[in-house]
Image: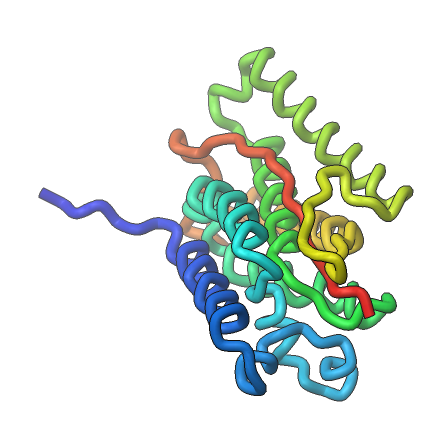
Length: 230
């Protein structure tokens, strides 16, 4: 009997890393663990690894649980199909939203995976729109997909205009959610996935991973992120 293959290793590895980083930051705060945090001043001084490690640290256990729930659902569903770009997409969606918040705003630090979760949601929606599965020929499914895409886009537009998260979370008196991370992540996810879809259709031999799979769910959820006000 063939053992089932784990087909979302990058997603699982990221979840474990986020759990470990948050555990260290909350249970054993100190000079060593503080070097994981995306501290804006330290990043400007050249400590660029914080752009990658900072989003793994979460403000609270509830914050971690919400982010991991979204990332695991999306990752388990879409990493197998988007495997050629999944590692690059993950790294870009960790680094760039963190840079956007810490280098362009008045925030002192940045926490959480909402930039990544929004990137993966956007990637999933773009992939579904490009998919050629028989399910997409059904009018109801197409209507649901268009509705989910419009809702996601409307959420991003609302947050960009109001600078307020659509689904706020209580993360403490000094922690505020930053919609800029959501928009940045969504742009990254949509851009990289569109480029992959166009490339793989034009040059099918570039990737050996099928674009379509009968196991793919269509998932559209949204998560929040947080930054620490100065």
